Length: 502
Image (cartoon, rainbow, N blue to C red):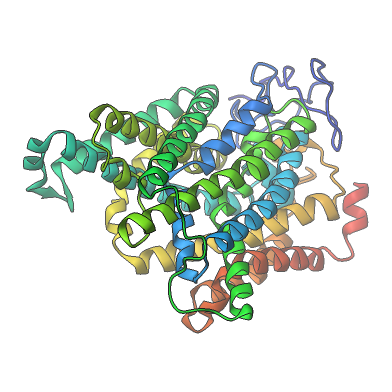
């Protein structure tokens, strides 16, 4: 991409304002666009790609309605919470996620740029690769793991439908059976094809996947309730009774564990909100997708979990196992398709789009959004996710450690945008590598932001990884956000006025 490529079609609103739908503000200047920072995928949104309220609502349906979301809900039983307390914890967490996504979504919509370009404001045009690659690493590994878990679920159903397929499980290669490889590569290929067709196809898949899994989960809830005699024990909890103080602590832990579950997509929500025509669309989509939709899904998940306690004496963490109990072959096939589609949808929305943009940001001249997606898919094969998932140490210390940095990054980016710069950003300067550029800082990196990340991130790493602080681990995200905000303001102290007036 040459530096003369026009941005005349960009529908970018003035900083800090919302555009009127159907109008096009003045085009960005192309005088100093650098091929090291710009390609068409990283450019501000185009009028040909507009996501409405329904589309953003479906993004959240795809993100929330998943096998992982249900499994997470069941996992809260380990904290000793009963049914109502589980619902309270998850709804409280969703409320915080809603606030965070409104802040990040409005910023992304105003600027019209994806997350790694938004990060250039705080970290510099080249320093933005630090937060972008940290987010990409988390997303790539979870993309691989989620694909494996979905393929394992599909394999269970294949074996039930075609018992002769068991012959394909008797030998293995690199720790996975032949049937396992077929199921894994099948889902891997489907997701790659969707992403390769671009963000418009991602939007269409999200619009389909979100409602489909709602139908499947509601049907499953009705089936479980019917088999349980339409009776649930909302007071059921694991372990011995807890004091009021212990219950409060457990609910707070559940709230922030819920927030941590969405920490990654919250951070890069600009990747989707950037396509909205105005701020109201972002706020409406978030309001429908989070407080309303996510809270309802939490309630349905708890109903299913408590129903399985009535039926089996313990909560079943995998809804696919419940579908496999259905006698009807037609229902079994429909359930398989629904859960496979839901997993593909959530995986692409949460774990595939982000690294595609993040990797494109490292070398825009050679890596497009589609190329970044291909690299993500190939890395998902190389990491052998079944080996990682079977090793709790790897998951807790590597993925947990990198994931603990999502809070500080979130705090730094929003504090810098809203508090330091007062939402005033020169978007054209995000694409220039000239030493005089507003976001060039020192050789393209804002060392103050890096220092703020190092200071706040080191604390959250200790909280998340040191065994003696296990009781604080659920609070790693809010601690990280608070420290990120404080360290950002501290390292920018004395320069705030000049930044705002620049």
